[in-house]
Image 1: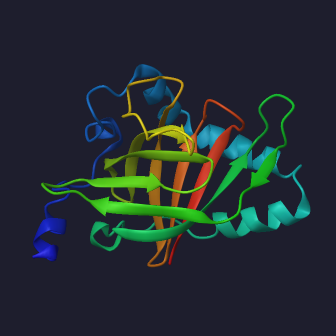
Image 2: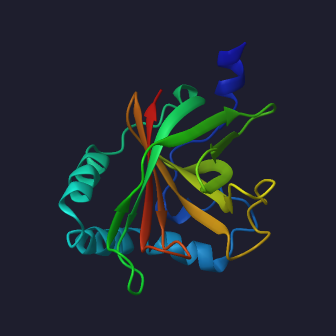
Length: 196
């Protein structure tokens, strides 16, 4: 039964670049489409800037960045994950690289289809949905929130909280959620997920 539910999560074929937004919600804003369009350039610039960071953080970032995206295998994604966030590339006078310790994340298969991603511990959290993006990545549209708040608001409720990005599968035990041009603190965020 679980296999049938998961098989129905996303019925999609690999998408071409021209179709890249087709799986995202209709309310994906122009600003967020622009963030995704600049993904590669912003990621490269942020990684270059992170070279100015502390040696210990650079060593962790090197491990986080290891591995290329492979077939996503959505049936393997649901469950609890250890996750740590690397904020890379300085905004203003902030540090060019900050790596946080492990927190808890989970991916949930929803009744009727779809996958929900949540960072559920720590002071800075995020919650949102995963969508078809291309052959080796899922798109993410969610919103940031803080641990002292009652809970997250849906994507599209507050532009200052909206987040978009892509989820890549590096191995059977590692994923990366990569978030370009966050509103605060960094040029690029990476949440590395490791199977608990």
